[in-house]
Image 1 (cartoon, helix red, strand yellow):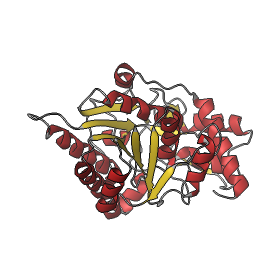
Image 2 (image 1 turned 45 degrees about the horizontal axis):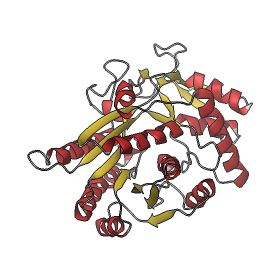
Image 3 (image 1 turned 60 degrees about the vertical axis):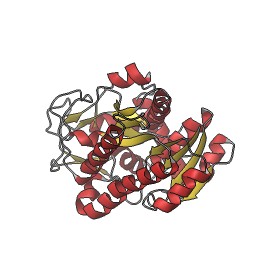
Image 4 (image 1 turned 90 degrees about the horizontal axis):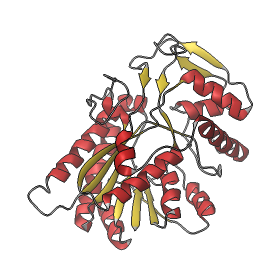
Length: 341
């Protein structure tokens, strides 16, 4: 199958490219490199041992997207492209709605013009908002608390409407909507991983940069939550397990039409301090941290119920916390050796 990955040079996109290519699919990357680097393409080729097609472009460029879909004879699209920092989304809502919602509309217009109707969408557990119960299943109410989460939910609603447009006609659209929890870790080679621009927004790359000496200490926001050690608990999933989930979703769409939603998570929550101590073991370094007050909008615990993905996609996670930390440390060490991070 020929598969276009929008945002394919990004963190999750690049790891998914490896999984898809190794499964025998032909992968085409489409990225504007706003939150990634062109050098990722060469590193992917080093991992795969073969050339990889990469096209520079923005998902809002409908004409270019349409021509790429046609010329590359694309069979399915995995849509990763978009802005993704929760905090920044509140500061720059117009940029986020443009890149994320407008970008999704442009992609769907291009797909319709090219008569391609199979898509896997990179959504987020942010659509759930504050948990009303745990673990969170796909039936949990969707009440996002920030522009990023609202972007994702609006795109989901758009995709539902697109699928619904098939009702009463011959079914065309095959849509898998994947709600990620907290991706961490890196490819076992250490050649690709999470490479944030500037100060990291996510816990794992921040901890890794403290461990390697690039940042002085981690700020831990809140140690008085109703959790085992008082710090916030999240569901961290290894990025390679997440990438395998996309392959499973594509296989699922071979025989399923309409709009289909799946949580991708481990079902296991880890606290901030548990992550810190696990990373200390992986790196052999002490990670300095300072306790701060709670941040507005933060919640105590959030973790997935991923039974549906197991039952329908035949997918489950295979990597543990130690694997997450060891791979992230190998990637951080590689970046530090190049002066890249």
